[in-house]
Image (cartoon, rainbow, N blue to C red; front, side, top):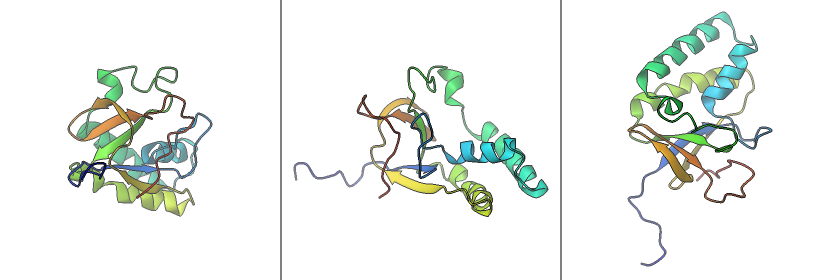
Length: 145
């Protein structure tokens, strides 16, 4: 059937703020956690979990900006966002603790799943980084399914 969505298309997952920041990007779960941590708003236990979690995630998967320093460049890719591949279950399993901490501080973070989050500018086996297909876009927003 022409024009119908492909039923075996990949789905990508992102946890992000429901509102865009001043640059138009909906801050992701790790950015939201870093904002709380750097502001000194976490309890001692939450801060320990945040620091241990950051170290674990840093070791568990590649930082896209190491292989391509321009991927998050504010001038070249101002609306770049990272998305998990659904196959990255070992990473996705650790996100709920971040969501618990954010919720305890009334910081909204929603799960978004889409088949086409944008134009891929970086990819590896667990994630992609995309920019909107429309170069005139002013926000990184992607509606949830």
